Image (tube, rainbow, N blue to C red; front, side, top):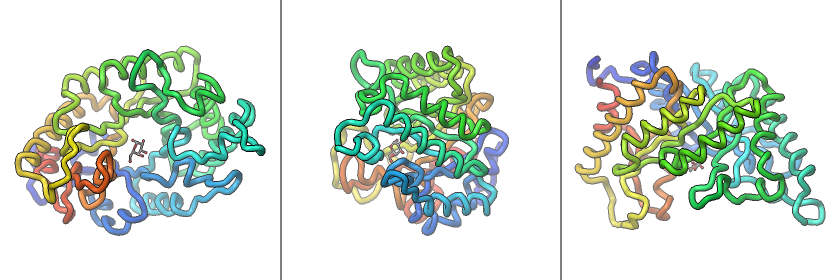
Length: 333
Ligand code: GLA
């Protein structure tokens, strides 16, 4: 297929393959509004559906910003992915402490998790069709399967299945995902596979695996991504690419002197996006949604991470919201 350069929109070109989403926040919803409407068929809230923002104090639920996102999505006929119900980050301390500020008991923490998940999933029951129920529970390094966290310490390993059960109880129609990063690394891939498989073996209601896709110009290799997709798909689950971006810098690159990307970076990025989307299309039976972690290069979390204040250009549209070479490679195939 070949599109005229002025006719390309991600969501129309990819309509028959998968949903194309973007993570948004109140700032980008305002400043990149027309691009979002034109290009994307699905939205994820970058932060406002996380525990810290939805329930900053026990029993005090703050839905306003998330509701605005949902209203926007509805108005423009977009789907909404819910992100996320349980994470070791961006979860307020009160969750983990009792009234004497001592570590919460297993029962107290599970009751709070149930209340949080039931309230949130029920609130968005009509509009949010899938949830990242548990985010990043698997350990990157060492022999341990699960990362050290307050959830693991205070509840035990079954905190994962409990979260899925609570979500399923609150909305039996929602598709429930386990979501993680470094998902294409062969060692972590096998750990994720093992955790998800054990959930399935126990009959836990889980329907998909989210591959975050925070990648860069060098890694992971296309082969490693392919192997990860095949491995997770072999579990019979749907896959979503949930947080795609291609950093212009490798993880250990600390340079901070660049004001703009080089042509070499942009060309390399375009090549990588092309290869990646060529492969995604091959798997359109199992991959049903691809979400970019941002809209355009005028705002990206990577301009503050892992090097504070270092500008980065990981998305398909530039800082002026114009399509980059990467965009054209993704829509022209
Ligand atoms: C992780 C989380 C996301 C987001 C990114 C960084 O990938 O899943 O919610 O916080 O980190 O922006």
